[in-house]
Amino acid sequence: MNLKLSFLAFFGFCLIATAQTTVNLSLDPSYANEVYYKFSTNQSYDHIATDWEIAFLRNNNMNFAIRINDGIGLEVFEAANTPVDYATVDVNNIANFTQLYNSDISWFEGAFNTGSASYGFGEYNPANHHVEGTVTFLLKYADGSFKKLFIEDYFGGYTFKYASWDETTSTWSADTTETVSNTSNPNNMFNYYNFTTASEVVAEPASTDWDLKFTKFTTDYAYSGGTMKYVVTGALQHPDLVVAENIEPNGNGDTSNLNYSDEINTIGYDWKTLNASYTYDVEPDLYFYVKYLDGTVYKLNFTDFGGSSTGNIQFNYEDVTSQLSTVAFDAENSFSIYPNPSSDKQINVLVESEDANQTVEIYNLLGKKVYTSQLKNAGFTNQRLNLSQLANGTYIVKYQAGSHSTTQKLILN
Image 1 (cartoon, rainbow, N blue to C red):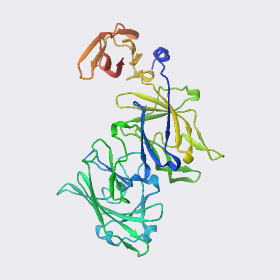
Image 2: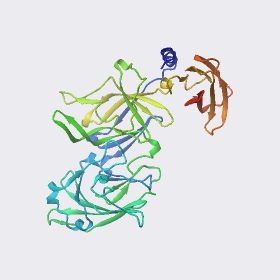
Image 3: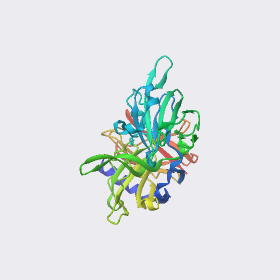
């Protein structure tokens, strides 16, 4: 990116610096809650962590994921890989079973998807297009009790059976069979089930109402001797978001090469460390950039973590979309607009291009072109546009230089 464009864009950014918002959330003592948070609305939603034990992806009939609630100490093992063995599973053989884990990289790979069958829990039947169960799973609870689970069928929903282990008689209870349909809770990403209460539960807000989930989850924890599976407390991001991590001493740092990731643990847990007093220090120079599909970017910095004694989490965030709006979309062309949002409907367009044929077009969200302007010069240009004829709202700005083009969102208010 050309130095003079970067400098002038930075100057424009300083003129429209946004105020930070401070957020205080609590998972409650012993992390009793899971908390979902949405930046654009500054809203949070609490759900009791123990309300669910298994989660079924429901938003895509052609895909499935089944996750275990590892945050409450619930473990899952593959006990057998043929259906007939379901009847004779023996909890005393647990040392010979394979423990399975949720992915902390993707929401769409749960522990039950990692079983030995082609689809984790079963095999695809081309005759009826169902995935039919072959694997028996053993669930071990934090109190030492057990259940066995067999996912019989997936076809637009999940049919499964399970039973509880009676330690006094060393026998299994009668089976309970349930079906959790993908049509339930149509605004949510997952449906949830509680084996202990034998009931479906709602354990998350609508998918459009959250960006981060603060919870306990299993990760590959690094230590001096290698890595091990370990349950940590932190933040997992929504699958529609990408997040970049950046070190910024005193809140200032280079953001020209942010590396955004769709791995859901990008924020994760290691923005805090346990000190010698067994309280937590947060990393003051560690910032996260959370990017929406529409290009909106929020800058996040944690400021306090209370640990399990309180479950309290504090962070600051601000909308930095306009500050990051300079786009270098090939080797010769860069484009930026400021201020964005614009309250007086006057915006500056900063471009760097050697192409003499440059245009700026503005479209409303219905795709109708509502403004066009020919930029005057090749090279570096800082041109002011008067958009007072446009109504307040959100628009898409398209910049074209010869055969190259890019778009950005613009808000007029």
